[in-house]
Image (cartoon, rainbow, N blue to C red; front, side, top):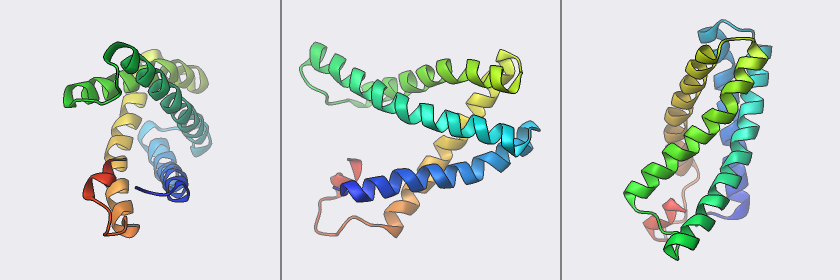
Length: 146
């Protein structure tokens, strides 16, 4: 497993690199200034981190109460991911609409676009991170999942 310091480096570098890419890209794609998209991106990233903590804590408590454990099958992982994104969308869409003074539909399309970007970015970032900062070879491969 990764150390606490490694996990902190991972999380901080993920957010910083993601913001450095998404702010100019979002400004260009959606025709807003980098300051406006920057505020949306930073607030969204902060809310996403907080939502991640709260959502996973509540989800695990519910699982333990109903199932007696927190192990997730493939189907449950898919549900977990969809529920997480739906909750995040519910919170972020009104904020984006209000802050950028756009319709809820435009805020929805922007939010879905940001989510799609971060889906691809997370895949590429995590792969690159594992190559650049590998887990020592004496640990089992399934520790990558933690």
